[in-house]
Length: 376
Image 1: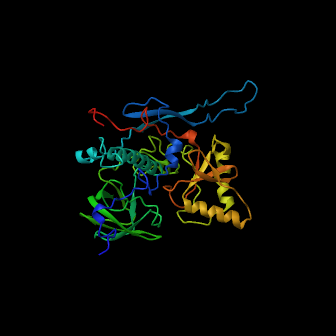
Image 2 (image 1 turned 180 degrees about the vertical axis):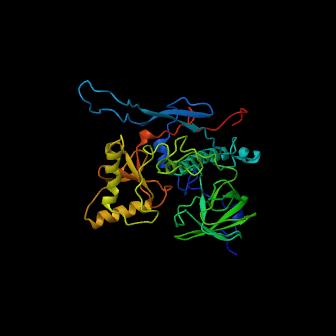
Image 3 (image 1 turned 90 degrees about the vertical axis):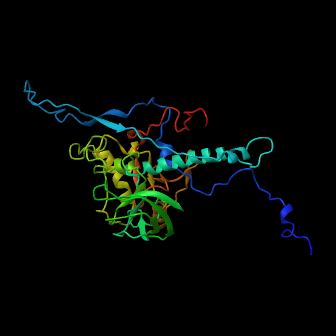
């Protein structure tokens, strides 16, 4: 019998094309890259307090008669907002055999397992932070689409889409939270496995007990509810964030109606994108706030909305060339404003971002691995 690669398999080497691991997973985190400000402020403690101006002197510039009475005196409105400290952790565990395989003169692995896990874990952490910055403080990963307490149901993104939901392939331990009060745990530490995805939903199965579920209930990481960072869905809103009955960091919409964000919607129903609708927020920001159209640095959306915008340009026989931004991000221009895609951004929503109105502070040295015991 002739010698072949099959018969001589025991002595045939495997050739690795490069001494590196090729990533096939999305690592783009635009909003985090844009808003995070590590090392710019020395931050410490349990929470961070800002003093912000919420109202003008309503009697400023009032006409009066010569030698007339000043009348009622007004003042500037000033409030404190208290932003709580948020802690996020990424843990890794390696066996001693795995560590030893990538060390020493006769290494048995071309990549250090520690390097692979720490560098990959850092990127995963930034990606998770970016997801939270797109949210409203709940860090909801997926939403129930109906009452179903038996394993084998469908979830979506809360808007009737199968993507983007934030469940990964394989099994993950999660909690199911009651959307009516954002506190009751309807499924405690259930192990959820992601299944087939369609345009409108994604199938899941789970082990564990679920009781009293309904449409819009949502999945979060185990024991994480109320501990996530606040994101733009809770900030750029005309309502209080779901978990903050006392308002966004202490300011309620009822008490400070002039401070809430301007939202141009259609009562929850989608409508066709038009250039006129896209211009409306820019115009109203200049009319209704102390900011101007020039203060909006960029527009942000999901990739599907960007595609709709390009369709408008083609239909209107307009052309715009993509622009490459710092960090390798590509944008298209609308009235001098870059439209940037963040693939963790909520579907059917276009955000108008003024970065000067938001802070996302990390520790002085940014995100880093702790070294409490001296062994990294």
